[in-house]
Image (cartoon, rainbow, N blue to C red):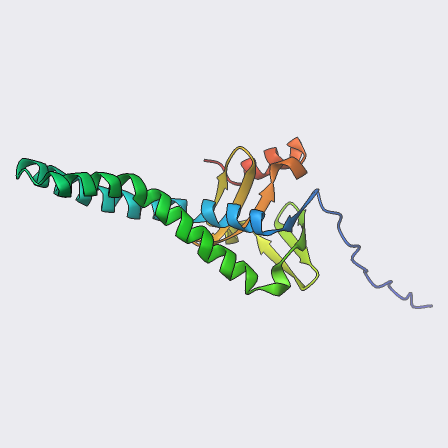
Length: 171
């Protein structure tokens, strides 16, 4: 009796269900970072402005009008100053990462994970690795932590991919 040689099972590479990409320019990096940190920045601004409003009201009651005017100007200027300083910090951070500048990132979406492909390395993330999805008019950010995420530009996505992501991360 002749023994048969069972053929080895060779796993064929799966094709991604959806693909999109982004080039990480300073504008895209800033947009993503501003979106990821939006809640914490708003909270800091709200707390500071509440304190200044209370101080301004007290100064007004005590007829300290110059202090009241100063605090009024501060209330208006503070959010603008915070955004300016944060964007300036982001530009310095981006400039210090030459490997990430203008990096082309390809995202391949599979039913159970997303594969991130770059010139400097690859990464694979299960959808359960993400803590949430932030969506705006122009982009989606898949958050891995409170301050780290993957930027996906809607203009580079099919409607099917957008629906797929919304299904993976219901509100």
